[in-house]
Length: 275
Image (tube, rainbow, N blue to C red; front, top):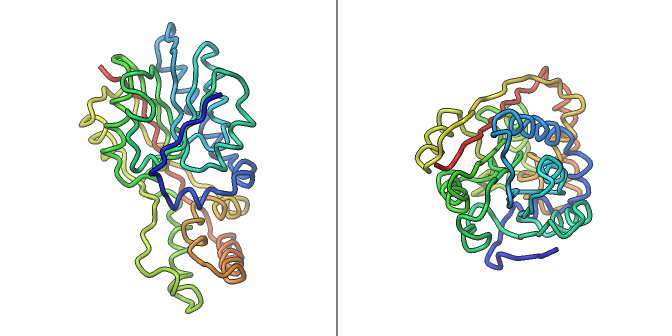
């Protein structure tokens, strides 16, 4: 196993996802979405596609990486993430010499320098890229590290995803004087985009679109509320420095979230090829 580090990387997302064990056990919905992406890969890519090198951007605890590895047993895989804690857990999940690990913040990293230019036959990412604000830059970076004829397979949150829960979190900040002081100048690191916006971005980066679609669904929040608190709520809750105040904010959020009628989940799936 090889470990590499983008030493200049410093990201709030690293702090947000520092509790890798909790995420590993509450990321069932993300893994389910990853299985859908893997199924799309099998249905879209040529039957004789046999990648030598695969990069998983935002590997988290390695569950989706392991799934992709099973699809392509002869490939070597690079698992990249901004969180050292996630990478440490991924190293426990992903055993063997075919895996290497890279610490990098996808928002700013020079992927060509870190991972190698025109090296990868497949670059994939599951439930991560909505954490990136500059999608145009990142998709150009992905294009740069792919081999000519290489493929990209991405699943990310789409515009309006978790709208009801995001609105609830922001309303809690406005209604109480307890937490507002922690949110001066706050910019949510999550950026959901539309399918039309993504199509424009990937075509401008040089990709041929093989499949791009939005999956729209609604779920009831009884079980989702706690999972959301361990993922998309973290940029809010981790701003609250006082532990007791942070726990009170999380409890109030989960209690209110369970009273929401239903929650919108919009997910973007994209598979494309570098000509």
